[in-house]
Length: 431
Image (cartoon, rainbow, N blue to C red; front, side, top):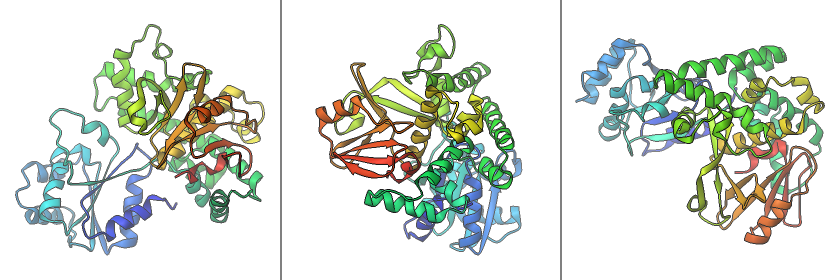
């Protein structure tokens, strides 16, 4: 399945001043697969190294990297493949399992930039937080990879034409002829989500029971991961915080509340757990801002935030929702629909590199997301259906006078009264 990160990988390859590349992302979002497929397409050969549990490979680095050429010779001998500068893609997979290998990237950057190195690590964001762990700051390039967004889902479905039509309508503010078809596929995406294995299972079988089995297996994998870089007590707290996300999103106010994790739970007991979830890439944090002014980061309230799952399909599975109810848009409560919709939008925005913020004023008005534009802060109002009345949006516009506002709903494209109407299926176009 084609991934949008492929274009960024090609841009990296073609740059003369490239540094070793590291791709961050949650487990099973497709990091290793994308790098390998990229290597097959754009290089003469690959030299693949998997560090987790590979003692002999780790020993090559642990003895010290004083000479990059000697290291290349050792690595070539280890896999029986000649490594040529420029024409061989060197892949370091699960690099967080070997601190010395991560540290070696500094030497490659400084002494041997002619070698093309791409690295991946599912728990790398956690590993680098450990005491004594060396990260080559300034000596590597970083890309973040997320679950497949809705455009990638459409391409996997063979709907490239529809994806192109959506992008055209977004730019021109013109209604999409295939609006109802796009909404149907959007609702299927709410069930399937963007985890590649779940998407692949759906495309091959159209069986939502099998899709859910894949999704629950991913949840179990995340739970096992929680014990890798934390104590038993910390792992239990992280697991409890993760499992509370559906409950957090089921209430009218989606602000994260610790007492929903456990009665009497306090911030100081679970702050590290939330940091774990964020660093592992399996949760998204949307922080409150008290003002809709530039720069947003200056006005954040660090004690108020919303937490979303990194993939809406995983949330659907965790909620035990009935797929056909979601797809038919029937017999699903407003709270559940709103939670899925908001989580979906957070996922699409995050995949586009847009930091997640929301605005609240005195507990009387709230705009679901705010986006830092070039000149002003743009409010993004979310509606899970076609009811587009938004008192909070009106208050925000009156107070801050943004260039325009964005309203996301089931309504078709348009631009009226300085409000850009964006259908739910086109959120990926906000970039």
